[in-house]
Image (cartoon, rainbow, N blue to C red; front, side, top):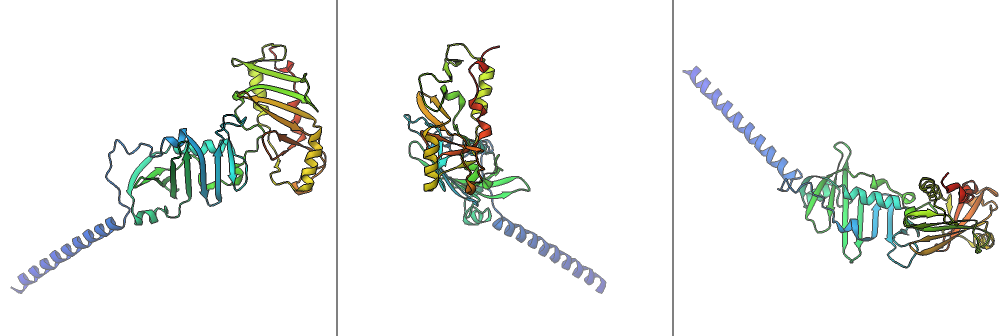
Length: 341
């Protein structure tokens, strides 16, 4: 009898243990569900649609980007009467031409956003995904004045994902990590070091002069209906001409003198009064003049050695550039070198 009672007691104890274990599991699951970043019910057909507004890709005029290296503000030139129409300018922290390649990388990265999951836009998720202190904070203004804000919070290198919010979307998007590491972009990535900051395909005419502009440039080529011709109206070789423009438009500065002191200003005036070369470029019907000095004396504060560099100043920019004299071979070309053999 005692044995049967003992068996019943053991069975009851086992039942109670199983019940308690079940309750613990259920409680843990409930707590996990409460404190885990929950996902919002979504339509599977819509989850991979890019949530970034299309206007940002087509009508942007101002961009502000903030990351751990600082805040960078840029503006697109919309003045159709300007020879630099459609190019970008860095406004802050320095006022200089903005690097077109960096702007393209930002836009390309946003155009290729792929959504993995959608999470509820609530305080616990905003904090958990670092969207209250984002790694990347971007503000866009488009031509019609509308403004958009995009934040990128936690970036998870393990599963290669990131968390993003977009203006007026009460949603947190878990996305594939951006194509380019925008969170690492610093000032140097936003400054355009090239002298010619636009697309060579937009150039209509190119002329070179020595020391002063005359009615007889030593080099002049003109584009007509997408074909290039020399000063005698002889058709140029398309491949040679394209390669020449590639080299010319790859000309880069070693120093940009955006804040010259009085001694530098005096040197600039003296050096550019009678330059070594003058380049006149026509883009979309507008002329830009570039004056290129003879080799200048040393500038220790910029690590410029004596007579090893020149100054280049364009008519539509305040700041001059210092360029190695070894790169000036691009101005010693002849029209004949671009002719068909």
